[in-house]
Length: 161
Image (cartoon, rainbow, N blue to C red; front, side):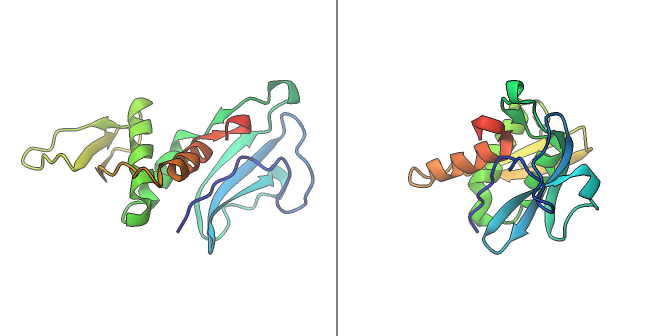
């Protein structure tokens, strides 16, 4: 399954109405037959996460003058990290996402006596009081640009995505 995530669409998925600057809306990553789709819904039309949603979060549409990139919420990224577990085809994306969360100090390496392996990262998350095992899976040179695009689209919104 190829994950192709997009930046906010700028309009409500249900009504088609464009978002006003500063307007609150909800975004959801929804599993579809073709991959993950991003769905943006105006707050007055939001009735909870759609069926098959992997993650969702609340945002404010940027003002035109300040329409710079915006980082995805940490909880949404942790949800995606958890849901990518056990999906070998998404192992490089999961590995790079985990490294980004370590860089942001959301996850931290933990010692696992007797379980040390250069092929596995053992990470802890105080925010969720959880531990994660992530297989060290750098993308191969042929798929690296596609994995990078997927990661950037997942992490950022706005022009950076």
